[in-house]
Image 1 (spheres, one colour):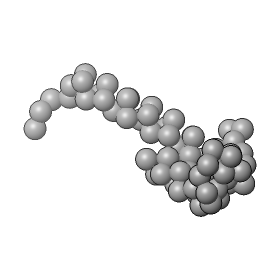
Image 2: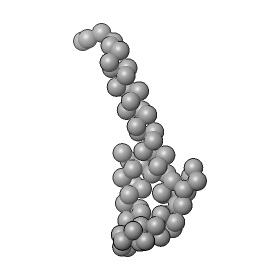
Image 3: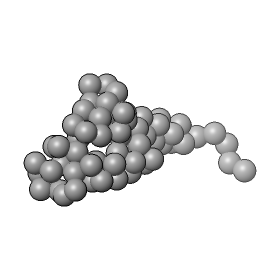
Image 4: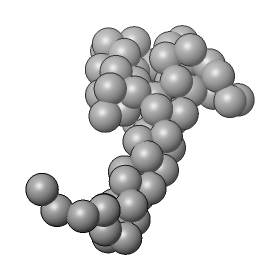
Length: 68
């Protein structure tokens, strides 16, 4: 077993920060938290960008980001 290393702490902080940002962005899409549009608003935006059906695309994107 190796001793606690600063590099390990740095990687942990990087992963927690990145995961927190992804979880927040996914919750904007899914739940409308943090000023997001929720499924309906994100679905309309997805359809405007050419991703049809918008609601299914928004759900998939939100789940992928929140789960990531």
